[in-house]
Every structure is written in C-alpha cells, then in structure tokens.
Amino acid sequence: MDAEIVEALRAGDEAAFAMLVAQYGASMLRVAQMYVRTRAVAEEVVQDAWLGVLRGIGSFEGRSSLKTWIFRILTNTAKTRGERESRSVPFSALEGVDDEAAVEPERFQSEGRWAGHWAAPPSPWTDIPENRLLSTETREVVARAIAALPPAQATVITMRDVEGFDSEDVCNVLGITETNQRVLLHRARSKVRRALEDYLGDH
Image (cartoon, rainbow, N blue to C red):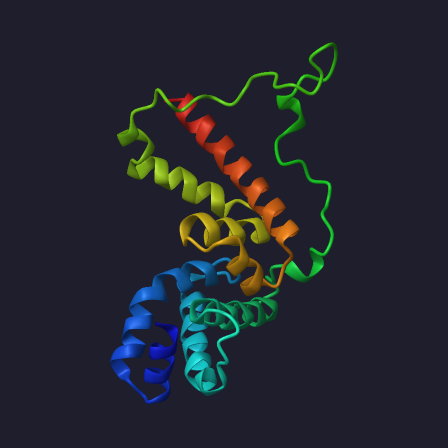
C-alpha cells in the first residue's frame, strides 16, 4: 500500500496527497502542538512538514513505514520551530532514565510490615458506568492532564494512546530508545490515571 501511495505522490497525484492529509493531518497537528506555543504555529509546522514530504518523497527508501517517515519530518520540523521559540522537547537528553517517581511516594506505606505497598490502592473503575467514562467532561479531564505533563511525556502518550502509534514507531519518530519510550509512557499514564481518579472520586 505504501509503495502505491509513494508512486502516486512522485507522479504528482493530488488525490493521493489529499488522502494523506485527510488521514494524518489532525494527528500531525496534535503532535506539533506538543512542541510549540500556539495552535497557529502548530498549523504552520504541519504545512512546512507537508512541504518537506513533497520535496523528499523522491528519496523515500521505504526503510520505515510512510507514516513513520512523515511524522519524523513533522517532529524534526516542530523541534526546529520549538527551539526557535525556546520551547524544545529535550528528547536528546533522555539517553538515561531519571529518578522521577511514576506515582507519588505518599501513595505507598512507608513503615512496618506493609512498607512499599499501596496506602490506598487505585480506585476501581469497573463499577463506573461506561457513559461516564466516555463523557465529554471526562475526555476534557484527560486532555488537561496530558497538557499538564512534561513535554516528552505528553508527546509519547499522545502518540501512543491518542494517535495509536505502536512503540517501535514512536521510538523511530522521536529518536528515543525503547526503554525511554516505555518509562515516559508509564509515567504519563500514571499521572493521567491519577487525574482521572481524582475527578471520578469527586463526582
């Protein structure tokens, strides 16, 4: 499928390009917003990335999927723009794993026989009606929680859990190791879950 689309793009097929824009445009905008300050700038980043796709399609070698290649162009473009705005996502600094706790230490027992165990376990969601979990307000809680994450964590959870990238694609697009991708995703999911627990516990 990729090969057919690539050949169509190389031949100047506008319908093939429009199909790609329709398929990936919204996702590209969400990822770009992780790197820059405003939606307007993110839209410019996406436009520049598409120009990069069209300019570079002749040299696309198929060593990754077309989707991964497109998003790699996007993130490179967004990082360059973000650095210009002094808002870069420091993936290059993530060669090692830092000591940030994925879950707040106070949620665990600190003394006695049960030291290290949950002080209060995560709230079960099995008894919460599905329509509540899927409500617009709940989705807004998730969106706000993601927006409050450190940029690297926000980008990884957006790509994995919002846009549906697999771990290999995220690593290839962002240029990070599988270990770092896994740690960033775990921390991000823990914080988003905590925000949901707080919200659902109050309602």
